[in-house]
Structures are given as C-alpha cells and as structure tokens.
Image (cartoon, rainbow over all chains, first blue to last red; front, side, top):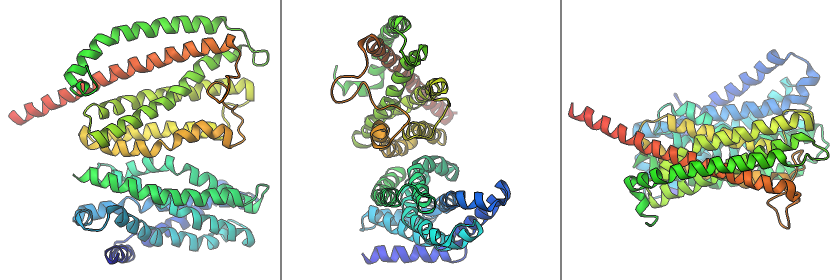
Length: 222
Length: 241
C-alpha cells in the first residue's frame, strides 16, 4: 500500500514540477472554450444552449492531451520496468497512476469549469449540475484513456494513435455527460437517469481501464 | 486433421488452397439464388420497392458484428493460447469487417432517405454502429504503426476485447432506447415478425454474405501469412548481405 502511495505522490510531484503537464490541460481547456465564441459568433442565447457541450468537448480533449506521457515518460527513463517488476500488483499501480493523472488533470478542469461557464453564459444554478457531471465523468475519460496510453507506449506515433484509439471509446461518456448537463439546464428529461449511467460508466472504466492497461503493458514490454 | 494441426501455417495454407475455389463457387451460387429471390420478393405495402435494400442492409449489419466477434475470439487465441494463426485471423478480419460495416451504414442511409426523410439520425443504433466502424478503423491504424506483426498483435487483441463491449450495446440499443431504427424482427424471442415471402430471401442473402465473408477472410489470411513470410525472407537476406 505504501508503495502505491509513494507512486501516487511521485506522479503528482512530477506533474506539478517543471516539465510536468498538470496545468497545461487546464490552460488548453480555457483556450478551447475561449476559441468557440469566435468560431460560432458571440450569440449569448446560442452559447448558453451549447455551453455544456463545449465544456464537455474541451474537457475530453484536455484530458487526452496529457495522456500520452502517462506511461511513455516512465518507459523512456526505465521506471516502468521497475513498476512492472515490483511486488505490488501492476493493476493497482496503474490505478494509482490513473488517480494521480485525474487529480492533476481532471480535477483542475472540474474546478475551473464554473468560471468558464460564465464566459459561455451558463446560468449559475445550472452550472452546479454541469460541474457535477464533469466531476462524475472525467474519471471515465482517464480510465478509458489509460488503455490507449498503455497500448501506444511501445508503438511509434503513440500520441497520434492514442487519440484515434481512445476517442471512439469515449463517445458514450460524452453522450451521457452532455445529456445530463443539458437536462439540468433545458430539460425535459430528468437529471437522474443520464447522470447515474454516467457514474456507472466511470466506475466500469475504472475497473476495465487498469485491467486492460496492465495487460497491455505486460504484453507490450516482454 | 484437428484444430491444433491448423496452427501449422503450411498445413493451413494447403487447406485454404483446396477450400477456396469451392467456397468462392458456393458464394457465387448463393448470391445468384439470393439476388434472384430478393428481386422476385413482393414489395412491402408501405415501403414499396425500397424494402429490397434490406436484403443487403441486414446481412451486412449481422456480419459487421460477426466480424468483431470473430476478432474477439481470435484475440483470446492470441492472448491466452498464443495460437500462431489467431493474430493473422484477427488482422485479416479487420478491413473486411470495416467494409461490411460501411456497407451497412451506406445502405441504411440510402433506405433512410426515402423512408425517414433523412440520410442520418443520431439514434442509439446508428451511433453504436458508427462507433463500431470507427473502432475497426482505429484497429487498422494500430496495425499500421508498427512493421513487426508480433508487437502489434497483442496490443490489437487487448483493444479488440475492450471494443467487444460495444457488441451487446449495438444488439440491444433498439430495446434500451427509444430509437427511430426499428427493433429486432428476425433474431428475437418467439417467431420472426417478417412474412416468409421476405424472410426466406433474406436468410439466403445472409448465407451468401456469410460465405462471402468466409471466402474473403480465408483469402486475406493466406495473403497475410505469405506477406509475413516475404518479410522474414527479406530480413534474412538483409542479415546475410
């Protein structure tokens, strides 16, 4: 357990110190959200209607941005071999790395989302629900992204491949995340059902993601 | 000849060489009979002649899912038993499955335009099949990134198994969500809800499509084995030079 805690703290330190990508994801998120009004025009009514979708798309792309270094950096400096050969379960080690990734990439997105909601003219009362869907949904993005990160670690053009592998699998998360967020703003569907499915997707991908990623790492590096 | 004998690529190639002409002939016959039956099948009282698109659409849809299921079994063969032909089977099935999925999407669009008034709607069935198509393409992209087949094979196998989650979603999407796409009418509990005059040609067409898939798949597997042999020979030659 202490080994996993050490791994978690190490990954978070690496992400926050020089050369880490922790806040770059959040910065990218900000830029994507700022770009959209220029692309579609500053119509406030339109922005508030598609605001949740823009926030979700931005979060999806931002969490993808830092994924390709998740295992690749450890692979290059050799620490991935140490993690694989260590006594703690590889699945749990991968889960610890995923948790570190979410804390440094997913959580900042959730925290700055209400601020960006102001730019998109999302009602403050509704923004609470949009942030809640991001809080429940971003772990799923990390869990699914793990699989792509592990698969692409030993392959060339890993970063580009990662996006192609991961994005189709994240479609359900996007569907139910945006559905829940929209239901809180415009209705008429209740907030509960899509939100519960979103939570279910997160829980399932936090189980399947580490299992598949650990299998991919074991097979890829032997 | 048992299943394990087929692990030897040379024996497999010999078997394929003997089987392929027969399979190809059977495919042609099945298509000739199926297309003639489909042509002579009565028009639907509501859909008119567009019902005939279904004879291509439904078998293509079944085989698009069958393709991924086959690849999932092959992926287990790669990961669990290290069967030497499992990866060849998975890699050969990906472009064929993608082609059948694309055919299902295109025929569905052509049918949807006169019937629903639109080429495309974002309902659960159509979306999940589109996701299947994207995953086929992603899997093919994974094979393109590395020239060493053994290295790509295990990564592809894991991705295939993860993607298999989509298969039940496609199958049950019409039951779980209220979709524009009609619910299952052939494969379901109780008798099929289609009149025999249309069901019989449909099943013959499904047989023809399945034979086509099998023929293309075996030929593609043969080509892949030969391609790998050529690569090995080239590497050996480069080593000696």
